[in-house]
Length: 174
Image 1: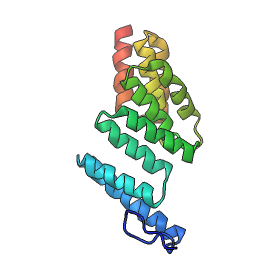
Image 2: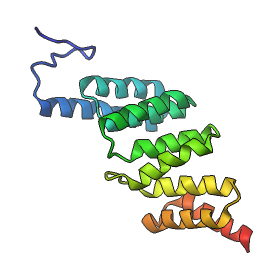
Image 3: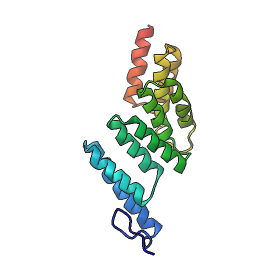
Image 4: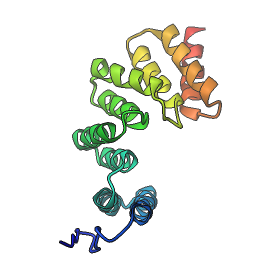
């Protein structure tokens, strides 16, 4: 039996390489749309990418798009979907931590940030250190926060958010 999905193509006749390419095309289109401020169109393209071939990246980016709309519950759900597909991918752990911080749920954010710091596959490991530093700073643990901001900068010296936070907090302590 031939399967036609909502994207309008026969998925049973495509090999895995062409499915990956098609999913990647939707993902790239979605990212461009998101970066140009077309969030609803981006969300639709992330969903099409997932329809073609579910990946941790597509779910994570879909969550990121939801977060731009302030829909942190949907963003967290998508990140959890990403983790189910690839528990070694660090981005969704950090993103859940960041969304929980935005919601004021600092205690629940910490384990996700710690998992992000330990992730095997993560191109931006400086993010969870910065986010953990934000939590520590809010709790008045300024020297510990400085340490996390420093670790973030050690991993990515050009990360301006960590740099700004580090120097701002350092100035407060002097």
